[in-house]
Image 1 (cartoon, rainbow, N blue to C red):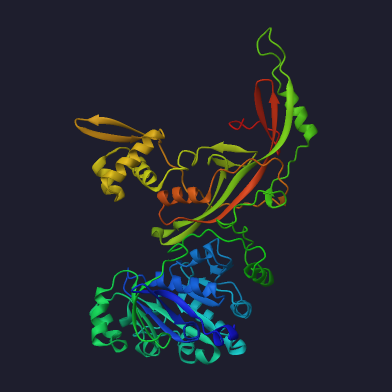
Image 2: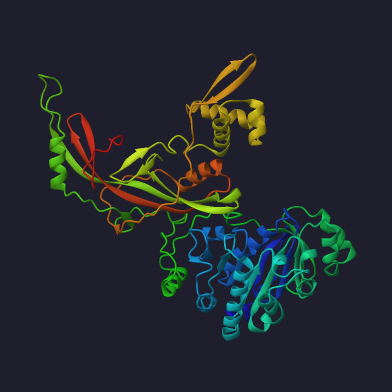
Length: 535
């Protein structure tokens, strides 16, 4: 990495100015002192997300102190180690040996998300992290970047700063340890620390005290531009860039605000190896495949429930289910075939707001039929219940309208426009699509049309429960999985805008399909019971 930062001196792409790409010097960013400043809605967390994505692409290590649980969506495309208090975090943020962990992650350039959104004592947790990271960097002296969101919490202008973080701001650079501080209120951030930040990314500011706090960075003309900056527009200046620039920050590759995190497979990666060596934390489900690498469906690469019934046992059960006669004088029914098939199920792990006043995050598990999206229970054998079968395949606008209708019971066009924030034309098209799908009907009240949902309720996000993945094996005659991750994600976002899929696995369940003259019967390969609704 020294060679990478030193000899090549790469630029980290950050945004565009008048159609030209603007990048910053990577070494100065990773080992220097940088301030990312902007009021709420200016795009500062988006900007930090872009920086993290670019560092991941360059294989450079960093740690994000994340008080709001916003950054785990980076795992949508990149390998990161996530420390937190709510599943599906990799490790317990308050229980892990941080010094031992940083010995491995700094040396292996593995990024770390330190999610403090649910920890008991946030300042204590961040203090211990800073102490451990500083100690490791004092020994290793490798380039590594510490990113601190809501920095004013830990380095306030008035109040007691975290001494460990203060030490990093003063002496970390000599050890290769850089610092990037993120704040929406620079007036509340320690002026001593802010003045040490020789790199600045400053977005829209309108509060006088905040404008005064950053005034020493800018010329008078540049200061006058700050209140006029739009979302995602930032002034960039300092030692990591030539001159000063007003840029439009690049698009994010991963979902903003935690999202999404639909993970890359990590069974053979550095993160899994670090978890194995640490030997801490509860074992997690393997991460789902990326969109470029669909769920494995070839023999030897799938999660397969092995059948408990042999073919001979299943044959006896099938013979016993023959109908002796169709009518009193009809011909006897014959069993003409018995085949083992593997039926696809989807295991989806979803994070969504929960807890007191929805300030925290919860994780739920959904088990769906991979053919149609019905919910599945496996206790006592394969059983189906209503789920997502009517919603999968709908686009965003019809889903939003349907959710609003089910919530209200009925509504007219003006109420749906106001409730969804969509135009009249968009709502009309969505209603037409829902009526074609048999999900909505209408009645007239005078000259007005009132729309009514034909679904009495929508599926919930489920609850957290333990689930053990079956071993990998060779599926026999696997049926095609029709439920796609993006379709399910679209439905979940309509039900709960902050929900994100963080696991998506295809499992295969054994079924014996008995073919008689004129009908088929499906037999559960684990329990021997007949499975209704699949024949």
